[in-house]
Length: 230
Image (cartoon, rainbow, N blue to C red; front, side, top):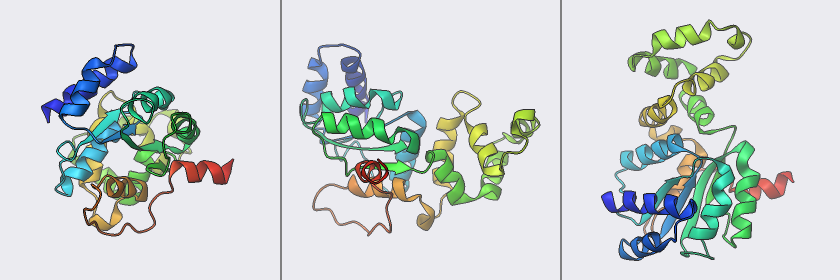
């Protein structure tokens, strides 16, 4: 939806120091009810692909998927979009290593942490484990990247790494590759193989009062992970 894309751009400008007038006006007009705070565009591609595969239009539901350009920005986004700012419901997905950034940013903004889910390592790792190394290699071949993968695997730095770690590293070796495979790998998932954090996020994005299928063992919310490991 073009208007939601415009809202994302207005939010990015606001975070960068703009007055925020455009973001406020768009949030009221669309309207926007929920912001999904993601580390980067590959996460957004995966969330969008899963939503589309389930027949959902997140923008039409008032959900804005926001890649922030890194977890370090979560405090600023939460402050502007959460209780101190637009008052939107905040949800999200983050890597294991970034869970503390999310927990602190949400806490300082006075926002609940239950709607943010933590991936073991990162989302690419979750997707590779869900599909299996053999299936991911088949997808890489079908996407025309087999030669690039073979060249990558011949590098001395890859010796001794597990096939799963090698694939995970490969996805980040070229600009745009993580974004492309964020979508492609999600599209290849069987319905019962969706990683729990991603499945849990889509479940909490459903509008209140809308029935949804039960989510089996969803990934723990960021706050729960932080409290249990601090």
